[in-house]
Every structure is written in structure tokens, then in C-alpha cells.
Amino acid sequence: MLKPNHFKTIVISDVHLGTKASKAKELVRFLKSNTCDKLILNGDIVDGWRLKKSGKWKKKHTRFFRVLIKMIDKFNTEVIYIRGNHDDFLDNMMPLTIGNLSIQKDYVHRSNGKNFYVVHGDVFDTITTNLKWLAKLGDVGYTFLLWLNKIYNNRRLKRGLPYYSLSQDIKQRVKSAVSYISSFEQELVKLAKSRNCQGVICGHIHHPDIQNYDGITYLNSGDWVESLSALVEHYNGKWEILYYNQLAKEEVPPKLEQIKQKNFALPQMTKIKIA
Image 1: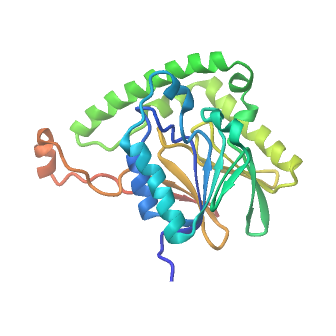
Image 2 (image 1 turned 30 degrees about the vertical axis):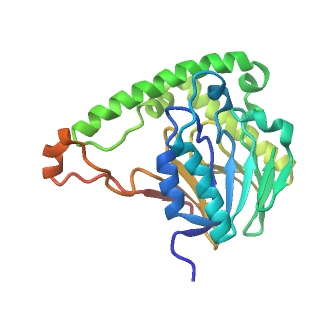
Image 3 (image 1 turned 45 degrees about the vertical axis):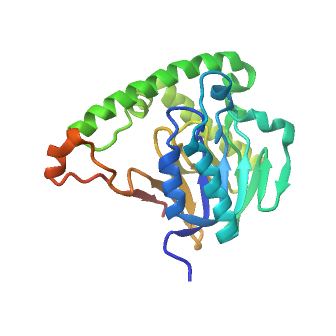
């Protein structure tokens, strides 16, 4: 009998391994607690752009791939790695299949009698596809925003407050960003229709969501930099977004002894269910 947190499918994207902002440690914990028959890595898992410049590969990044191997060995998990724009170094080796691992440009996932077109989503981002130098310039500003987010949350932790994504809040308040997300979703829905699919699964914009557009189900797995989110498919065909805040209370630094005495508890993993 399968454990309650074993799913038919788990989809994660935008992990950006090789960057300081990547939450690889949290993702490893998530995958140790939540297993599946099929794991879809939907792009930007490794940040090749950052590694070419100032990025640094750490043990926790390697640990992520060790967890994948363990999932394949223990649960016979099928791993589908979809190429994103930040891991475009995979272009020279696609398509590639080795045992339960395959690397592809896109993929069609069968779920509850429906076909879901799986793609990272950068195909509709004209900046990343046609003006890569400009995208990398924007990446510098985004990195600064994530640094600011880290400083902000360190102060919240000292006050006994839970993690809050300042960077996401800023993006959601910018009208141009909101407009971009809307048109991004609409274009991917059109793409799914053109592929005779009833749904689309993507990432890229770091905005987890489940929506329905004209009979097409739009699913976005979010990211493991800001949202710390994943899509999961239950055996009854229902899809759900899981947000990882902190599954276990971490060791409290000496400076936070006063908070510790106040029985400060970190938030648990939260869920959003689709009807």
C-alpha cells in the first residue's frame, strides 16, 4: 500500500541549481517526503547561465541528483527532464533516454483521459529567445531583488515572523508583469489547443497557478527560488499545488533563544486544491 504522500506525478521547475537563490536543500527535503511514479523536471533545473559567470556548484546541488537516483531505484520513478532557457546547454544532447531518465524539449503527459502538453514556456518569451543578452541583463536585476528578499526575510525571522516573498509581491504589483503573465498563459493555452491537448503544464515565470481557459487546463509549477512550489497529480486525476514553507523546525540560532522560549513555530506545507 502506497503512503499518503506518494503521488502519480510531481512537477517541479525553475530550481536554478548553481545560484545562491536556489532552495536545493528544501527541495531535497520535499522529495524525500513526497515521492511519485513520474517526476517531471520542467526546465531551468540547472542554471547554466549563472554557472558560466558567478555561479557556484555546491554539495546540496549534487544531493538533489542523488535523490533522483534514489527515487528511480526505490520507487521505479520515471524522470522526464524538459529543457528550459537557463539549461539550454542540453540542446546538444536532446533527445536522450537512459533507463528511467529522459531529456526532451517537450512532452505529452496523459492524465485522467486528457493529454497535457508539457513545456517550460520560454518559447513564448521573445526576450529570452531572441534577445538573450537583454535577458541576462534583466537577470542581474532579478538577482539583486532576490538578495534584497533574503535580507528582508532574515529580519522577519528575527522577529518571529514566517517567510514572505518580497520579490514576488513586488512583481505582482507591477502592471506590466501582471499583463505579461496573462498573455503568457493565453499563448500557452493556444499552443495546447494546436497540439490537440486538453491541458498545458509549464513553468518559466515563477508564478504557480491552476486555471481553466475555454476548456483547457493551465498548470504552472512555480519555482524553487521564491514560491517553493510543486504541482502534484493524485491517482484520481486531480491536480494540486503544494507550497513548501518548512516541513521541520530547523535549529534555532542562539540569537533567537527568546523567540524559542515563546514556542515560535514555523509554518507547515500548505495546499491549494483544484475542484
